[in-house]
Image 1 (cartoon, rainbow, N blue to C red):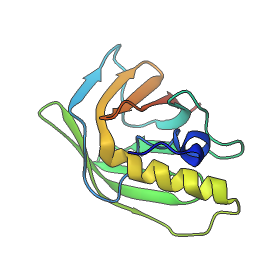
Image 2: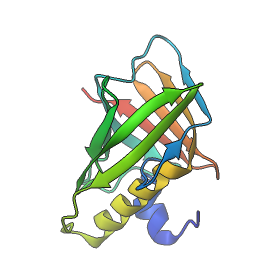
Image 3: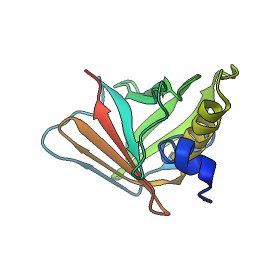
Image 4: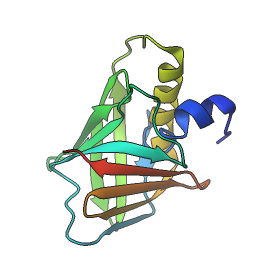
Length: 144
């Protein structure tokens, strides 16, 4: 994954979470009893950078195996399963509305693409961390 200036400003936040194809997590840990399902996760930091001002990137893992959220401009849906210690996301699709700001659109595209590169997911109370195989780290907080 190439990190560009645009990525650093708009997509670092989004690099680890989305893909239009299947996405596998090599390791999955839940500690402190934090439940991944039933609460929305809001992206707070992507490899040291916050999301663009005025944009909100979210992720929701439903108990029925559906994943959904917002890339900052468009909504997305897909399926998730947990298999042999791995979290696998597949069948990802999103709406295709134009974003008012090109930087937000670029951030969203990077966010959606990044899910397929995620290799590690760790959940602790109020916090979800996703890491890509090339070292990008995305930190989410549970939504209030």
